[in-house]
Amino acid sequence: MGTNRPAITDISALEIIDNRGRPTIRARVYTDAGCCGRADVPCGSSTGSYEAFDLRDGDARYGGRGVRRAIANIHDVLRPALVGQDVTDQRGLDQLMLDLDGTPNKSRLGGNALLAVSMAAAQAAAASLRLPLYRYLSADGHVLPVPQSCLINGGVHAGNDLDAQEFCVMPVGSPTFAEATRLVCEVFETLKGLLQRKHGKLATNFGEDGGYAPPLRTSREAMDLLCEAVTQTGCVGDVVYGLDIAATPLYDSASGTYRFDGRSRTPEEMIAAVLDLVREYPSIVSVEDPLQQDDLAGWKVVVDSLPGVLVVGDDLTATNLGRLRLAVGAGAMNALLCKVNQAGTVTECMDAARFAQRHTCPVVMSPRSGETEDDILSDISVALNAGAFKIGGPHGSDRGANFNRFLEIEAELGPVGSYAGRDFAQLA
Image 1 (cartoon, one colour):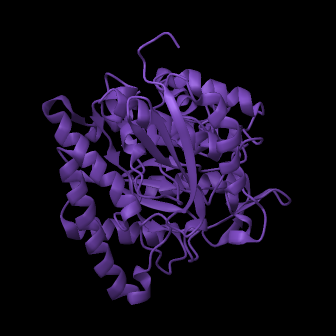
Image 2 (cartoon, rainbow, N blue to C red):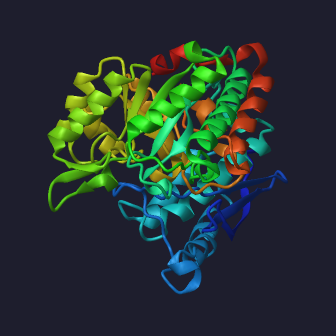
């Protein structure tokens, strides 16, 4: 190659399982510097139609969810093309894979195949240069995000009657990420006791995001319990709240109505319900996917009606630069939920995040419901100086891995690091 840059010598992939017992991909990229980068691909339950295509086998294994076809594409298509390439040329590697796929949504080779190699290559490059990943991806990465921790689960992420998907606490008043973690865990324990007393032991079963999935029916019930737990923990002044309505699965296109909080609603009634909820609980500072993903005009009404509240695009934008340009241009959002597997490569994920930040839309980094113990998203978050990280509840090693990686990074950065705290919405 005519440079002293570390080159890729081999790529391998393996079918593993995520925290739900469903298959996903683990990839390894090896370099001539004697280093190896490893990455696991996250997978969602609630997915938007604009996401990168998740290639599955569709046969009898794992109910059709196997990933052997995607792994074969890594071994037979991506590996021959990438061996010998400069592992530190992340943009070049990702573009080469996009060219090999040649489809708008990565449906030929699979977005999961591309992402596995993309993330593993970034890890290999960082290891070859003896840098932590966040520093390899950005010389300026120094912000520890506010953990937006989902303590009550609903929607498709839980087996209860709550329509909204996530009810989150955000410890903005904590001085450090370490103290924010302590506060989240203490509220989590207090909430457990409340749920057991009010609804019995079965109320402390878990949803897919590491929060509780109690037998509740309305968003107000969930918010009242969360607020009571925060009050009992003694941290009312330090905590605000975030909601994920995840409205696209609640929308019936045939009737043009939503099913939300126990009844059918027109789009206008759905907007009114969301606005009423936020106004009733003024400490709600973030609302994700309040409407279905194609109602740009309705989204704009929500944004205009809730000054000072983050209206976060997830299914709306799917970490897709084209969708992001459309939504920002329409005034339909003022914050981006950033998910690497929606984009399909590290480069596309970071390009979308930086586009949002340039257009005064702060970034909320997010894992998926289907996760492993891979903590790569914590490093990407710090590289982007994201103000918040939708981390899930502190239950299970898949969620704990990200909490613990942020704690490591905070310790490594020392006085150079900065906890986003109350400035989480200004980091754009």
